[in-house]
Length: 240
Image 1 (cartoon, rainbow, N blue to C red):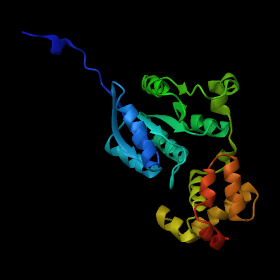
Image 2 (cartoon, rainbow, N blue to C red; image 1 turned 180 degrees about the vertical axis):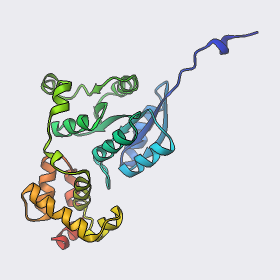
Image 3 (cartoon, rainbow, N blue to C red; image 1 turned 90 degrees about the vertical axis):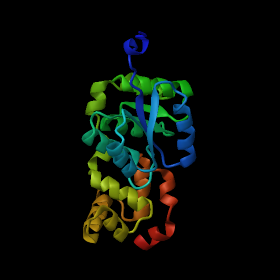
Image 4 (tube, rainbow, N blue to C red; image 1 turned 45 degrees about the vertical axis):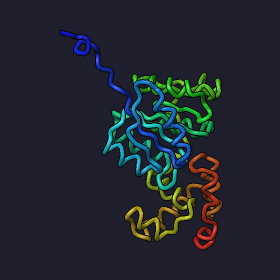
């Protein structure tokens, strides 16, 4: 009787969910992931809300999550994943090496931060490291940041973005993407007056008097993609 298959240990693959709003980028990353031994891609998402839905349908071990996505950005999705699916570990996969993004991601519960220009071998190493329960930060992140960012400092650091509630950040992103008050109210199942109230509060918090200035301040602190400000200029003029 051949006992080889019985005695051989079964190695559970690392289940990965890939989230990026660019179809070609997802295709390229997926092609790389499928070449890695012991890695199984369980799904792809193009925005933050789809990520949450897919985690429920196909629970992954690790989510590779882009920051700049429409509707619900990666940082907002990260907060919800950390809160609702604590067993899922998240690696932020981003083109941004802005320290504001890095601090925000780590404080929100990311287990890794990898730049998109990283080598293929580093992507594989990041998955293995994070799946094993450790933290992985891209080699491209500045040495100075790593030297001064102890776990205690990360836990205690306060970002300017923390003055905003999750709902305010969500509404700010949608405003920056050119969504009208009515559209936002419909999407988030809020009243028009509630959206208008949050918008007024955002003006006060950021010390601005118009939507264009508000969006620019959000870009400065790293909350929204600079491209978002130009997505729907006609709607922005109407909103003002």
